[in-house]
Every structure is written in structure tokens, then in C-alpha cells.
Image 1: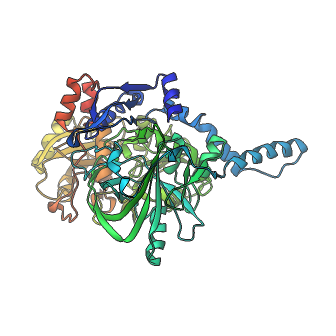
Image 2: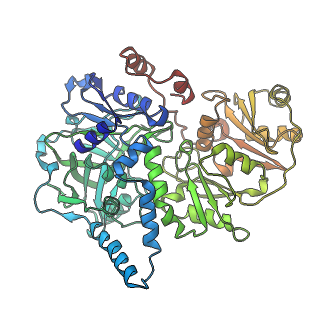
Image 3: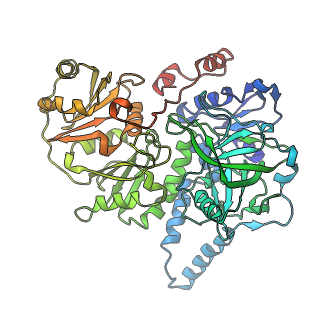
Amino acid sequence: MKKTIDLLTKHNELTIIEEELDIYLEIPHLAYMEVKKKDGGKALLFTSPVDRKNSRTFDVPVLMNLFGSYKRTELLFGRSIESVADEITKLLHMKPPESLGNKIAMLGDLLQLKNVFPKRLKKEGECQAIKMLGEDVNLYDLPVLTTWEQDGGPFITMGQVYTQSLDGEMVNLGMYRLQVYDKNHLGMHWQIHKDASHFFDQYQRAGKKMPVSIGIGGDPLYTWCATAPLPYGVNELLLYGFVKKEKAEVVKSVTTPLYIPHDVDYVIEGWVDPQNLKIEGPFGDHTGYYTLEEPYPVMEVSAITRKKEPTYLATVVGKPPLEDKYMGWATERIFLPLIKTNAPDLIDYHMPENGVFHNLILAKMQPLYKGHAKQFMHVFWGAGQMSFVKHALFVDERGPELSNYFAMAKYVLDRFSPKMLFITEGITDALDHSSPEALVGGKLGIDATQKFEPTTPALLDDEKLLVLVKERIPEAEDLRQYMLMTPNPITVITINKSRRVNECFELLDDLNEHLRIIVFVDVENNNIDNPYMLTWRIVNNLDAQRDIRIAGQSVYIDGTNKNKIDGFKRRWPDDVTCTSDVVASLKSKGLWDLDPKLETYYQL
């Protein structure tokens, strides 16, 4: 961490904040603001964290927004992200050498792989310079942040969670939020699809306690590797060695059999009793909504060890854009060659930040036969973490750059027909709140590799069209049309919902000559002139099986929050929003310096 701080300082990528700020809301709110700035703002080092509620001060600085820009992410990798992807591509396409020169070149490539495997050190690590055992264990000695007002408590948000299978043959490094319950208990939010949860199942069946060690800090690449979507049973520290060209050096934990990097700043060790579940949450999550209370395993902490002068690493999640935008960009680029092994005609893919990863993915491919794109949809929906994706849109090789959203929208809408839509069902992320039941919901695929010749509707201006809509749906409040230069304009209608929106769909059928794609959203908390946040809202709220209706050339979409009116039996969570008096206090101290237009635009 100290090397990282020096690196960031050298490149003018760090802001040091010496003002006393509270670990309850103040520090995370300021980091949330910073990442909303152009190019992700700066990394923030808070040197005087306090806990006013418990009259505590900390001599440990808090580092946030570490990965929060493209430039910083590549600085932390030590090289370009594309160079890592190129090496993986080269490795996957390695062929037997045909000449002596080729043999020598291949030998060099293979020798580099010797650094992939972690090296176990026999001595103690820097992370074990100070040990707290037994009664001395106190999680409140760490400046663990409470990010949002409705959060169930403080959460560790950048923890590297090290686990192993029951037989010890497989190890895993993952990242899961960790709720602090008291001085020596943590909530383990590993979702049922994650490797740590698979290991937990083994211990549960055997009736044995499961060892866990949690690292915080150290080389930032440990943290990124914890998020990498590697196949089940593959140690993520192998990826660290591949990227860094040096072995991860690991030491044995003090009270568990697990090995952790010798130079992390903190290690929290303990045991999970499979019989002990406790309510975890709520937590304002990266979807921009709170995930609600559910029972999760509990870890009893047996030891906390640390460096002599540690730095506490944390992140903040909520509405996009966030630090995970840049961590996800690195993942997206590096793992493209691996995805291509199952989908060889895939050219590229991209996860827009306001699709919050699992809610929206764009892909470009070379279609070779009818139904090829649908085949790829099934590959995506059946491949590891990609299987959580709710909405996938495919274009052919002539499509524009996937990150050029206006060009992409125009390309698709110029050739769109409802025949492109493919609706099915599959697993959803545990963070998804919109489907009628947890963990399973509707999936939407759009095969825009096809080209149709859509007819252009008879366009009306917004005011005239709104009058016609209100005659049929009195609850409609406002209306805005987008992409009018295409034969498939998108009409967004805000509504004060007093009945199911799908009951309103057919009321507009007689206006089909003017309408093509019609999207309903709630009046409350939506700005009809902000397509960035409307996209975020709609892909969050949509269950394709329930919320889409096709009528002739028109597609109706219900992007509203669901409630009892809709027969929705689950509890619908609140948006994540900043606490206004905390923001006012930060502004009064001259620390909150976000352009007010961005504050409104990102609906802070």
C-alpha cells in the first residue's frame, strides 16, 4: 500500500484529506462523490478517520477510489490491460514450434509461467507483525465504514476472502461484503453461486467448521484478482502471478490452515459454523438499490493480524458510475480471449457502467448461420458469472464500437423488428430485486445481427402525443421521444401508477401508427430527460417474462418499480441515496466539490 500511495502521488493521482471525517457516512459519501467526477477523480487518502458515535480516533489511514480511473487501473497493473489480454490470446493459440528460433521463443514464453504459482514462505509475513488473539480481537479497532443510512451496520467492502475445499485440494480467493456484527463476528455474504459457498456446502454436509482468512490491502492486484471470474477450483493468485510476472508470496495464517499474501495490511482469521446463520444486511449495493436482509453464514474471528503501519482499503458502491466500472473494464478486456474459447466467432463484448454488469451486456460477433446469435446467448447465459446477465444485445461485425452508445442505438433501431427479441428464463444474481422470485427470472436477448426493413411511424411532437396518451391513460404525466431519426423511436412515458402498467399497454394499440418502442417509468425519482439514469433504472427493474409485450411492430416495456398493485410479493428495495445533512456538512467544510449538474445528473 505504501508503494501504491507513492506511485499515485508521483502521477498526481492522489488527494490527501487531513480533515477529521467520520467512518459513518462522511468518508464513503465523499468517495462516492469523487468517482462521479470526469475521468473518475482522484484516489482519496483519509488520514484522520474518526468514529464520533463511539468517541474513537484511528491512527490508520483509509484509502478509497484506488482503481477509480482507466489511468490508475493501468498504473496498478504496471502495464496496459490489452497487453495482458494479448498474452492470454498468445497462450491459448500456442502451436508446436517449427524451427529452432520458434522453439527458443516458446521456451521464453513457457519460462515466464514459472512465476504463476504462489510461493509459500516459511517465515511470518509483514501482515503478522502485530497479532490480536482471543479476547484481544476487536473488529472495531479497524476503521470499517458504514456507507449508507439504511445499511445494517459497518461493512468491509474490499476484503480478499481466502477459503479452501474440505479436503484442502482447492483454494479460492473471492470478494464478498462482510458485515461487522460485533467485536468478533462477521456476516459472510457469499452467494449460492460462488466458489466459497460451494466449499461451505462441503463443510456443512460434513458437520465441520470452515476456516476463512480475509486479507485487506497489500498489492492492489490481490484485490482485483479476488473479483476475477475464473473457473471453479482455480486459485485466483495464479492470475496475479501471470499479470505481475512474479510469484505471489504467501504465509500461513496464525489460527487457520489458509495461506495469505505476506504483505497485505490486515488479516482477519476465523471459523464459520455451518449451523450458525444470521440476518445480514440491508446494504446499499452496486446495483444502486439496497439488497435486503437475508440469513447468511457467520464467521467467528479467532485472530486479527496487521502490519506495523497499515492502510485500510475500502470502496463505495451505489448508483453508477463507480470504482467497479474501472475494475470491471480490466476484467472485460482480459477475459475476452477466454470467452472466445467457447464462442470463437465473438469479436468483442462490453458491459455499460449504467447496466451495472449483470443487467446489460453488448456483444459483437460474426454470424455464420441462422440462429447463431441465439446460440451465443445460451453460451453467455451458461458461462460462470456471465450466466447472471439479464439482457444481452448482439450486433454483427459491421456494427459500430460497442462503447459508442449513440451509434449502437441508431444501428440497432435502424434495423429493428420485434422478431429480434428472444425471451427466456434463467438464474439471476442474488442482488437482483426485480424478478417475481429470488435467483430465477426473465432473460432478454436481442439478435440485431439480423437486418429488417422497418416502416417509419407517423411522428408527432411530444406535446401532441402526450395529449393522445393521456386521453387513454390518465395516470400518464409526461412523455419524451428519443431516436426520432430512426424507424423505431423510443417513447418514454412517466406514470403515477394506480394499476398494473401491463393493463395500460393495450390501451395504446390504436396509436401504433405513431409508436414503436414504448417504455413506462414512475414519475417519482426519474428524470425523463436523462437517458443515462433511465437506462440504469429500466434494466434494474425489468423482468423480461413479466414486463414486455409485443403488439405488431410495437414493443411495450414496464420499467416501473413493482409493488402490491402488480401482485409483486417480494419487498421492493429503496434507491441508494446520499444523506442530505452529511452532504451539506461536507460542502460547508469545502470538501464536497462536485459540479451541481453532475450531482443532479447522477441522482446522488
